Amino acid sequence: MKSDQDPQFDSLLPAARLSRRGFVTTLAAAGFALAVQPVQAQSVIRTDAEGLDTGEARIAVDGGELPVYFARPAGRDKMPVILVVQEIFGVHEYIRDVCRRLAREGYLAIAPELFFRQGDPTAIDNVAEILQAIVAKVPDAQVMADLDACAAWAADKGGDATRLGITGFCWGGRITWLYAAHNPALKAGVAWY
Image (cartoon, rainbow, N blue to C red; front, side, top):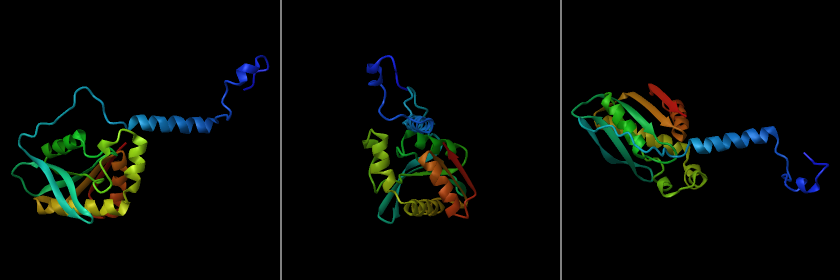
């Protein structure tokens, strides 16, 4: 858009014109960046752990010990197992709460900290930096092996790994679909955003 009336107006326009496709792509990227920000609610929902066995454990995997958060109904065995896969922000309170909610429904829920080899995403404020410094360095094959180890651990801890499901949020949603293709014994998979 050039102005024939005021030459100084032209100096205010961008040198490169943004196409409609470029505008929509930029808008979608900005919307995605806003959507994946950690939830900043004033009140955090926290499911009560009464009647549940909750805690943290470590599972031996290639390259170290995988930290996991788990929740299960207290005093029960042979529960179906649900793997809960985090967003790019790691296993934070919301992910732990999802595990407790699933435990209230009778499941052994496990949330593995799948970035433990690459770093702590909670120590980084910038989403782009988390993606570059941590997420981009996590091989899919490593994640699949870690999830297999979680399922085996669950079977040793009273879970029924023949009734295995997975759910994941954002990055974890992608992992949900990859794991569904990887593990033919999987009974259910639900991806969120």
